[in-house]
Structure formats: C-alpha cells, structure tokens
Amino acid sequence: MGALSETWFADGYIDFELKKYTLLAYLQDINCYFNESKLYPQLADIIFHYNNLVAFRDNKQFLQQQFPKRLTAVNLQKLELLYEQLIADDELMAELESIIQYSLPQLNNTIKEGAEIYEYVAGNLSIFPVGLIPLETTEGYFLLCDGRASYTRVYAYRLTIFERHDEKFRGIHTEYVQEYKKDFVHTIGHIKAMLIRERNNLPNPAVYCVETPLVLPVDETLLPVAKRSLVKYIAEQAA
Image 1 (cartoon, rainbow, N blue to C red):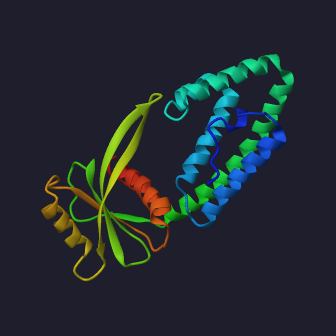
Image 2: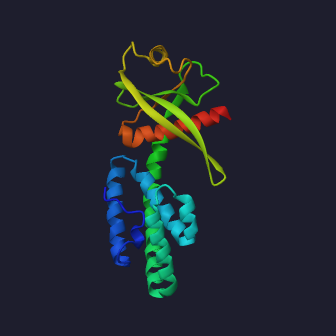
C-alpha cells in the first residue's frame, strides 16, 4: 500500500495539486484492498488520517492529546512550526485550507465504503456461548468458523479496559491457539473440552463461537471484525 506519512499534508512543498494527487493515489490503493474485502489495517489507517486532519484544522493542541502514540515529537514539532508559518503567510494558509477542504470529504467517502463492508460482515456474524459461561468472562477462548466449513480456528482472548479523555474503552488481546478440521469428532463442545484438558491455565474458561456463512480474508477482515463484535457481545451480556 502507498502509505501516507502522519503529516503528509504538511510535508515538503505545500501545493494543492501535488497533495491532491498524493491523496488520490493513496485512496486508490485503499480501494483496491476494500474491493478484495480486506479491511485492516487500511480502515484504521484512513480513519487515523481523517481524524488527524480534523484535529489539525480545529486545534493543534488536540493532536498531542489524541494521537500520542503515533505522532512523534519530530512530527508534532513540524506541525507546530507550520502553524507559526501560517500566521505570517496568508497564501500558505489558503493553500493548506484548500488541501484540507478537499481531502476531508475524499477520506470520509472512502471511510464510508470501508464501514459498509464492516457492517455487512458484522451483520452476518453469529456469536453464542459454548456450554455454560462462568461469571468471569475477561479471559477465555473463541472459535472462529467461516463459510468454508472446513476448519475451526481457536483463539485465546483477554479483555482489557483502559481510560482516555474521561472515557472508558474496552480492548481485546488475542492469541492464535490452533485450528481443528471440522468433522463429527471435532464439534465445538469437544473442542472446548480439549482446551480445558490441554490448557490448564484456564480451568473454567468462557468459550464463545463466532461463525459466519461468508468466505472472507481471515486476518485482514474476519478476525478483526469478530474481535470487535465479541467485545460488544460480552459487554452487552454483562450489562
């Protein structure tokens, strides 16, 4: 993928036509992935760039609060210097405003396309518990089955809760365990029993099954959507 730098709109020569074609080339690459139903990391990347532009337009201090992990000190300094230039250069200010005004709807339209794929996939997922679920559901396993109907993938999961800007967010960490061939022996109940027997670090784990009739790229689409959908499902069940 032709990636954009975090400060692509302010890098080098600030020229509307140059930045326009830089953005369009990037979006063309993104759309190639979306056309193959590959969402990640492309969807997260384009959302970052959209939020970054909005933050830059609205308040430069917000940049440091919103994206401390991705924007380096060097990039933040570059943006701060750019603001100082803008104050003294009306022509540069107008050019950058044109770039931002053009870019935001272009980015937003592509985000909508990715979001539609995401919602379609999420809407075709079925999530249900395998056997009895313990009171503690922050750790366990989930079984991932798609329309190929040939293998069941098993992942260990651990939920986390972190706070940012006075809000609480739920995250999920997963680890691939193994896959089992779908047959009369390896039912979801039998897989759960084997997990408990073979992995005694969780003697009474929560186990869920996430399945879909769709056939999708697993790592780029199915797994990321399944993880987010499982977090939502567990939160709703606990409410």
